[in-house]
Image (cartoon, rainbow, N blue to C red; front, side, top):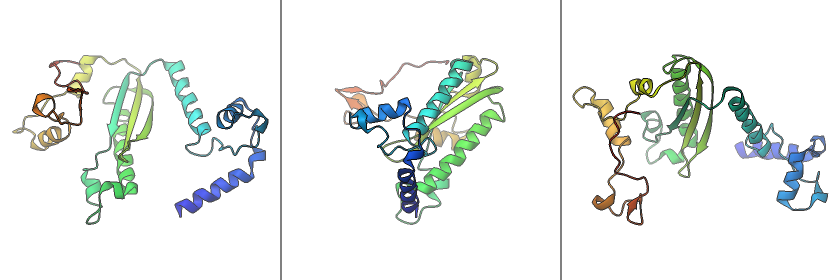
Length: 220
């Protein structure tokens, strides 16, 4: 069904090319990049900005992002939120023998809901302070999992000490928070590399490509 909808959409766009403003500068760039023949301008099948994921659609998003920076300067926070295929919300909905890569619809919906919860936590609950504006971009890794890069602008600039009050890179006390300890030790610790595991995928030319082990830093 999804493929049929996409096909009908493409056919509609192809049959309505005369209604598109193909004389714009970005269309000239299309002609040069695609076939190098500027005489064919207006003959290319052009995806309009209303088509999600098209070059014009992404170009408009990029212009919106530049407008934010022009108005408010550099963002105060840069946050990366990554999908975890081991989330119970995903695993509990899989059939026997299935893995998250078999059910992209479930993976994406769970990721979307958790991303929304994270944004509400930061924006509505103002955990980092009052938010002036924000944006994020969702990308897909080669293994089929999404992750979001988030930019946040605050009304009041935040200091590194204030960030340390909310976020810290420490291994929790297992006697105080066993669940949190298990989550951190399972997901947030770099695997063995170097002389302890020279066959690690992180190893390149005998060195860890992620530059581990690193010196301890007590503050942000």
